[in-house]
Length: 575
Image (cartoon, rainbow, N blue to C red; front, side, top):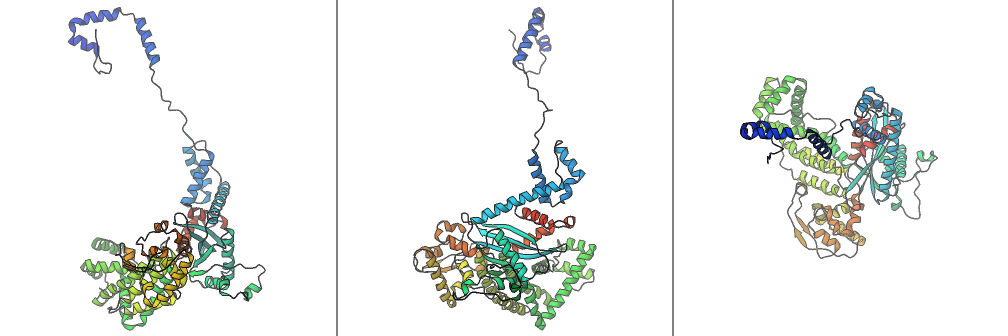
């Protein structure tokens, strides 16, 4: 018997002839005597039993359906901000047909119609979401682009289950004619009504524009402040000439970020009234401006700055006050680490070096404006609650008051504190204090509420809260160290209370996360009510940032309705 491996790579005949030469002739005769017909039949039968499958590479690949293809094109147009006419471009059609030869690309008119249908569906979803919400905050502002003006409105609420803040862009409506207070008031009311939230909006946040301020002053709901025997009637001439009746606007709050920006720019300039501050400040700014201009206008200077200093200098932006602060911080760092290189740069390009007074001024300016930057960053956060407003402003003033050993920038400190007091006159009203008290990040653990001067107000507000929840008395003492930058900014250390009930146990609990309301669910609704408002109108400003991209040079002729559809679909893509 002869055995061999079928997977061997050796030639069997050659092996037999070389190794088994004495047996090879017998084996060859035996093979020749074997019936060739039987071999062919055996091969045929074995091949029929084990037949290798043949891959059909010509098989048709999967192609998306018409609906899937259309939705992909709509997503592409919305996300990439390309003109609507892109779908009629032969190159675009050719690209689509390259991937899917049988695809039929919709025309521009069909695209607009389908975008409109998607917009309607999105609006229905937002209305449905808002129908299950008890408290809503809106932000509003005006924006102009391509010789047209628009009113933008966004909505914000806290989900009752997850306690996460939710947001939606509601509208970007064309404002025809002048932006008068009555026009804006009616538009805001109509937008609230269209989403069925007119009785749910507890506060609307805007900037300090006079038209907005007057609109809310004239049409804000003041029913709670009026005696029951009297009815409030507005006798303004505008209302006498209007046929339609006005509903009321919700409570109004001015944007904290806008106010802080005004403090850091307009109010800070009043420090120039001090002669010593003015001399050093103007001298420093002139030298800095020359250095920034040289960097921007001379490629040789820019290359030398990179080579010697390692990075470009930050040039201030007139629309962002903190860009001047950041430029001073970077310049201060460069002067500390590479002053010789910077002096050499100035000498080589005919610029005047910074003197010792100016160097000290830069350090003092950075030190004074640092708390302003941190406060503005806290208030400008997209998901920041109203409970942060009062503690932030109080801590900001406290940190500025601590800066007493300044040689040049003391007038700047006084101007900032004066500006804050002027622009935040009602910062410690009941709603703001309650929002902070019921917020897990603060409770009673912030300096203003612990000040003996405010004990009467503190007791009154705590008693008010006790009426909102079952049982209540007052608490004992506990303490802890700050565990993050936020707590370090606010200086959280000691808590002081008495006895034991739901509210006091909440105050004594060291948990500063939102998940604490899983344990104290009785306080959850109070937290939602008072912290639903935002301290800032930054979300509507972000909406306008997207609008600038949507209504670009290649889309300047978009119809108002198409602009709103595209903008809101892009802004609400995560809903």
